[in-house]
Length: 400
Ligand code: PLP
Image (tube, rainbow, N blue to C red; front, side):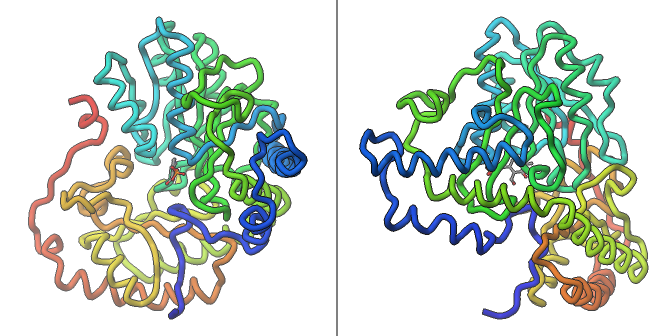
């Protein structure tokens, strides 16, 4: 395979070699069902317990607060449905305009079944307002769900303060921490966060395994009914290989978090500074807010994000567009629209998301290849020649 310059780590990450090694015995010799009474099953059960402890150590919580799920999306759905079923008389949800579709589309569906949803707006830096949150939460609010870090811009939300605000009005607090886990130091015991979702494939474990943290004492209603796995909170035979893998990934993340953050941040800043200094009319979205160290969302005026990605891909560089134009619509990303990024910029957005597997040599390769691509696209851009652009604010769209 030709060389891949992988800058799309918010989409998914490379499984760490140590993680792959950790899961292998469970695909060969240790195939027992952890629920079985015999020694063979019990052996496997012990590995699940070890993985749970490793995850609890990463999150700063108790092992029994960890529920394994199939993915981040399942964790998000489980958390929100659990809150709604725990407080059936409450018909209001508070979330933000910039959530991942795993929360946003669930909320849109819930609106059709009689729930009222408040979508908190963000400012031009991609930040929510805690005052607005305070005003939005009422006695009728069952759950407040606010992501810890945004997948497109990396902007970090003040979820610990948000949890306290939710509690003042008696609402549960859930956070989608899929992009934050393994990148932000967490000590959940010391927060008021009731529920937290994460996904293995964003922290160098395989796709198809997730975690839902539920704080001790929080009302909880299972999403999947069936067997007694996960203490009766998530039925279905455990995905033992991936649970072991995620345990190992959590251990590695815990050990290396600050060192890796420092390394990745230096690369990200080199990339960002290099792009801004060599290409005119660019902006870094969310740069004025606290951000994940690995994420850079950059808009290039008068060019289309998709075209940039195609040209980058030809050079072996994998990045992502900030926009969701895949369905053929020309609407830029709901996140950038909520931030009121001007349309001439919003269309030309590229997200570079790094990991510890990136190198300075790879960053320098992007810095060499990108400027001529933008220059070429600007030469042929109909936008640069004064064609009108149009679009809609993402929040307005949700309401209508
Ligand atoms: N939430 C956020 C913020 C994400 O970035 C993602 C993945 O892209 C998800 C949820 C969904 O996770 P999964 O793919 O494990 O369902």
